[in-house]
Image (cartoon, rainbow, N blue to C red):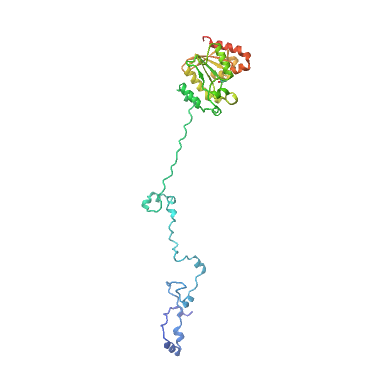
Length: 325
Ligand code: URA
């Protein structure tokens, strides 16, 4: 390329046919009419439609890579301009974590869209208060309240298998308080103490010393619910239940207590001595009020039904209880 070629030259003037013949005559036609290899002005639109055929050949074709990455003019935007956030970003959930924007009310921000939903109500469940221990619950109860507490009691596992809790039944004022072990099957069914065969024998024994359960005697048990299969009550069941008996004693204020069987005797007297060593003499139970209630221990009627020969000893025990102590 000559230096001249690099210098942009103005387009040749338009000529008529006569001028063209004249130029040919003097040998200047080709020189005069040569198309200057001038690049199109930088700002001229570069599209196939507007570029003249001659000029189009002078424009290097766009590189395929470049044309692939150049977006269409209608959507092309300078890369530095961030795109507006999609609609979802306007929702409160999409607010920046800094909290600056969320501190500005939506009405001031003039955002479109539904108003922010109120925060869902969180239900605060009040925890059930821990159960009051039996000893605490019975402290000020009268006999009626005490009976209601026993019926509703869930202080040990025995409540799960019971049909009825057996509070006790009998005369008030109470001359004798008879204390057995725990309800059996019949008592669990009927909710009354000593209603089975043992109960019939007990009634006969009491009658022999002039006592009746309707007139003189209140009958109850150490345990108010039937242990499954009439098994022996467990220490934790005794511990849970015995406050009911203690409150019954405090409220009934019996003249004396007849305790039937080893289990009831050991529980009430707080000993692990054998029944043989406990019967035949008078014990005393000290109440919270300072009174001393005479206590006589005898065999359980269920044992006497199995061992009738022991009834003579039981008869001695009843006579001891009936004495003026
Ligand atoms: N045995 C008991 O010890 N108590 C009852 O109530 C019945 C049977």
